[in-house]
Image 1: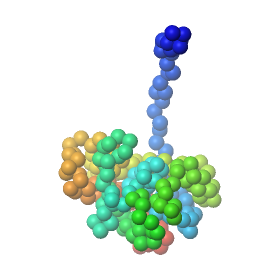
Image 2 (image 1 turned 90 degrees about the vertical axis):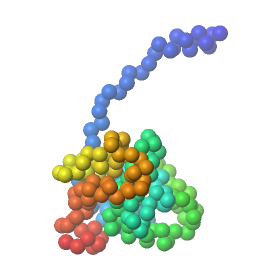
Image 3 (image 1 turned 135 degrees about the vertical axis):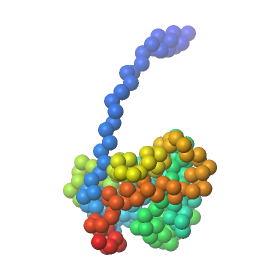
Image 4 (image 1 turned 30 degrees about the vertical axis):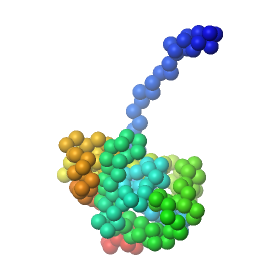
Length: 215
C-alpha cells in the first residue's frame, strides 16, 4: 500500500521534453576524403565509410547492414528501416559495389551481416566508435562525428537541384508520400537521382578516392 501510494504521487512528476531541434552537421567533402584516406589498411573501414555516405546510414544502421538487402549485380539497396519500419532504397556507387564484392569474396563465415568479426559476430557500436575516433584523430578531424556522414549524404540529396524531395527522403529512410512500398521494392533504382547528387557532392572528379575515379 505504501509503495502504491508513493508511485501514485510520483506520477505527477515528469521530466520536461527536450524541444531543441538537432541541427544537421554534414561532413565536408575534404573531411570525408581525409578520414577515408586514413581508413586505408584499417580493416574494412573504407568500405564502411562508402556504405555510410552512399546509403545515408547511421553507424548502427551500417553495422546492421545485411547481404540480402543488397543486389550487387544490379547495384541497388532496399530494406525497411529498423527504427521506423519505413522503406528505404539506394543505388550503389561503382566504388561501393567493388568494395562490397571484394569484402564478400574474402569473408570466412556465412553471417547475414556485411560487417562482422572473423567469427561472424556483429560489431558493437562502442567498439566501432573507438576505432572511428582513432581514424578521425589521425586525420586531424577530432570534431567530426560518424553521424555527420549521414547528415552529409542527406543534405547533398535534399539540396540538389532537380532532385525530387521524395527521393531524398526515400534514401534517408523517411516516409516518402506518393511512393508505394511494393513499387519501391520492385524498382529501388528510382532513387538514383538522389544518389547521384551524393556522388557528385563527395566522390565525383576532381576528388579522387584511392585512384578509382577518373579525374
